[in-house]
Length: 173
Image (cartoon, rainbow, N blue to C red; front, side):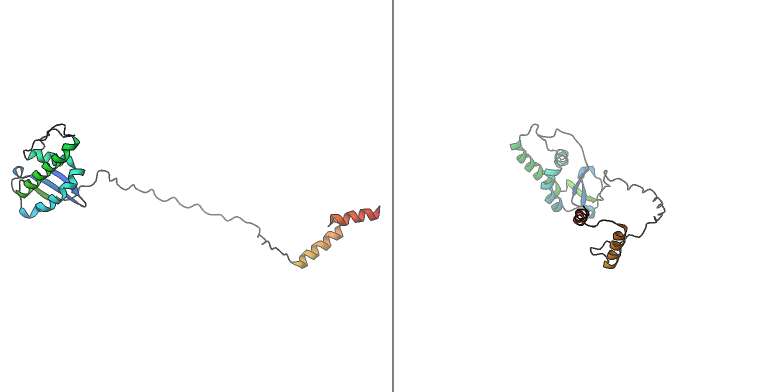
């Protein structure tokens, strides 16, 4: 797919890692300090990456430099067109028809401000509940206490063993 003629004279902003560059057609710029310009070799090195990630601005630069883009480019012809666009942009950078300036990155449009945190709610007062002390269960209780409990139960007439009760009933009968 090709891009029809747009006629956009620039400047174009392209990003490369942490850097952002603004590319300008030299005839559109009146005075420019040479120290502000990024070396052509540095921008030439980025062109292959930009042809895949930011193709439209490069095609616009190609047209702004006088190139004519064909309509309905097939996928087979696209590689040839990209090579032609790249060669023309390299030539324009070396001849200083196209210059690149390093610029500050813009704040991203998707960056939202940090939400204001509501004031912390006061902690409710903790009222301790009065509980009876919990006895720790032991596997073998105190034998003295156990013997005393059994004596009291025997005095009250509580049967301890079902077999013993059956023998007492047979003996009584």
